[in-house]
Image 1 (cartoon, helix red, strand yellow):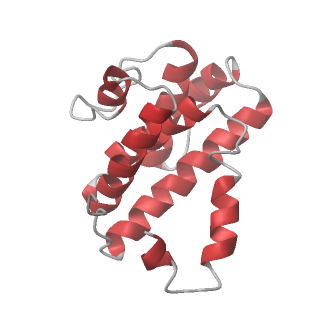
Image 2 (cartoon, one colour):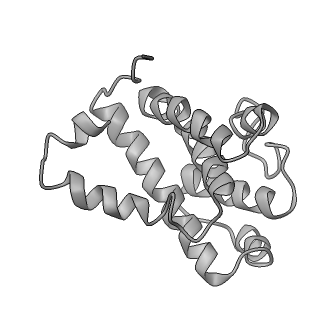
Image 3 (cartoon, helix red, strand yellow):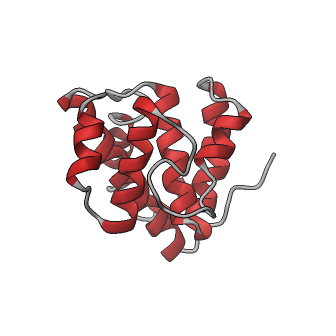
Length: 152
């Protein structure tokens, strides 16, 4: 990924700073951020989503996610209905909003109201920026045919 984005040398450093303001130094907790990133990666699919899933599965575990969390967040074959990922409460609301952003490029009023009952305004903005950043990154990595990193 860094080699791909680094082809435009002046773009990479500011993009890294921007991305770091969302994760790991964002308004959302590290485990929640990783859960959302994994959901976006699974929804986006293709090589870009696969790249993010590979990278963020390991980061998610370091942040405290367990295998069951990762499996649930990345399960997308059961449809787009709210809650199909198996999470409830705060995390469920976050993943429902991520689903709608990736699928529709917008969020329904009921989903937003539910999210706002769990997150502060600051956290809501952070979530939207996190989802759209990683959805865009997955798209870019797919279009630019960026392969998943080889294991060392």
